[in-house]
Image (cartoon, rainbow, N blue to C red; front, top):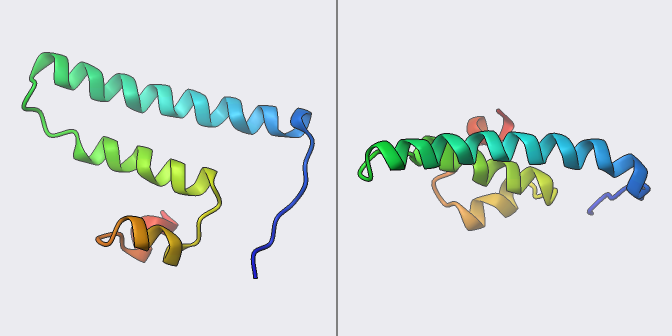
Length: 78
């Protein structure tokens, strides 16, 4: 069973702002690393973005595992 809460846009705005800020931070880090060295390994930062998207869409571990077969429960639960 999927549980979902109905919240107003006003209630969503602080959450949206927080996620947006964090995504911008990680994206900036990835872009800076790639600019300095196009071969830079940014997989850890990119994985953080993936996890944020899973959480944002309310995916369960099993659902996220379909998308990312290598995902561990420890990573998912952070």
